[in-house]
Length: 305
Ligand code: CP
Image 1 (cartoon, rainbow, N blue to C red):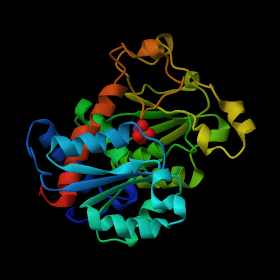
Image 2: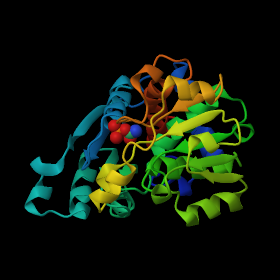
Image 3: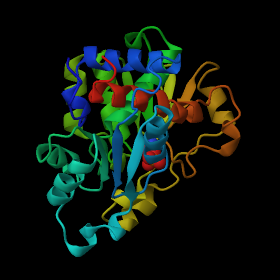
Image 4: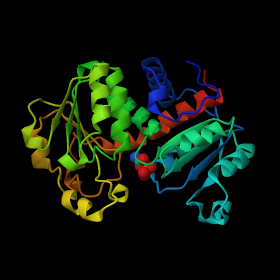
């Protein structure tokens, strides 16, 4: 698959070979290859929604590789505030940079952006829909632990309805036919059509409401935050807020070797004293955002073949 000049909008645009190419490129970057491959390139980061990891890791990934960054966090000091459309904003910024990275609360915003410009667009999260580069770094992190993505069991815990990182990663793992289980309150179940699709792709799936009900030993538990900002009805949020909290005692019951991942930010779904356990790899996961995003920026700007 050709990456040069390509937008990265959805994990659904990816096949297994492209995902493996991204993982391999990130491995090369982490080993010190492709230094300064963004020299002379300008990356714009347009964040219409809050972010710590995605925004800062894209920016530092660019700068470590010799590139420059322009952009904003919050559009209130841009002409969006004067009523400029997203399409006009993108068409304008396209003339100032080589890649556009965009996070926007509206599902489909990144796709729309990619349709009005020839500059590659990277979706850094669109509403509850997709966050493909998070999935790349999640897969990269898992791949550092195991040699075969099809031979592990992965569980997802928490807000599986609104969690775009869950939707993207579950779909990506289904390309490898990884067995998956989903633990959530009824209100926050995985979307049924996505669950059906994942099963049809060849992943065995099972749903639970409580961690204690798990019948299988997991290799990885991917914990997510209940996404308060996505609830239309705050009373519904109150019904599920704090429904899970992983503590060291609970981690011990899940098995000695289980690895705990989380896209972060966390609120209170993982107790801070889990952080020092060997099982906890969520900060390492977040730091893998650098080589993974360096790799993807190199691939789409054509400076990495
Ligand atoms: N994981 C993630 O997308 O984090 P941020 O919202 O801080 O970018």
